[in-house]
Image 1 (cartoon, rainbow, N blue to C red):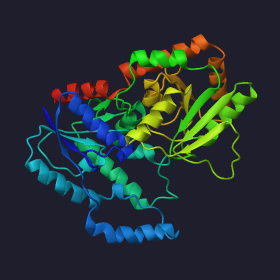
Image 2 (image 1 turned 180 degrees about the vertical axis):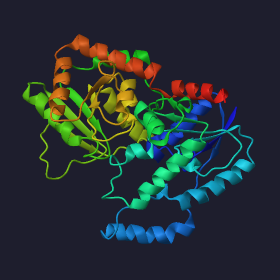
Image 3 (image 1 turned 30 degrees about the vertical axis):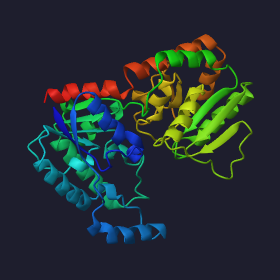
Image 4 (image 1 turned 90 degrees about the vertical axis):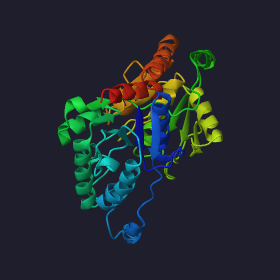
Length: 382
């Protein structure tokens, strides 16, 4: 079976959409599908002047932010490029990473997409009406409704996103499938390597890794408070912050290290991130808003449990007591996460058992190979 893989990104770009576009495509190829990439589409030049003026007004505080990803005129011009290339293609199915690019697509082939959210699920969550233009919300909902309506099937990385498609856009449940994303890792560690890591992982200090590019949205302040709470309870800790910098007014204690942004798109960055994951006791990501963070399966690949929050699609990735702990957002969040970590660090056998089940979740569920095989099986039925 041959699919036309539709993406805005260049085929080998490992940075686009947190690497999802690259690893999604490659996983489908490794699952045995023949993949023809329809990508590398540039923003339409005819809209550049308007975008330049709009961006300038936004920077001067004279206008709210307009998200051009949801601009129908841009999508229309992208669609012309896609349809022209589909005319010359022998692909059996049009398959898109994300849903927006297929909203205006006309083809006799089945149309499918794989994504992590709907526009409705992002309203007042990622996108806010006091920040974004009214047109952004109108366009986003219209394009999403069109995409879901014409798709033969839609794949979502969480129940949260899938339920939004069904309830907010009246998608037919039989056309909606929940298939998780995998870990964006080159050569994940083997079971034997993870067992060795667990044997060598010291009891102290308790190393926690915060990995996120947005301090507030990813809950950096919560992560810092959890580590401070553990320290007060007598647990010697080390918090490594990767991807962002805490606000300058925050006075960081000596057990907190800020390592800045580390790119996963080059061998040096990959090696550093692997080392940080391998030597951590927990990934801590107490997000205020998130879809399905890729770093969670990546942590599980190294037998590292996740401390996180019950928000967005995270509960489809992290299952309490199996590969980490999701605490409710609220006044008891820090207490809940710190208490869970304290209990595990006080019970080495219980901690090791959680590490092993975290690894098992990666090998059986949260990896690209398993998910791509499920996608392939569904596509073959079309």
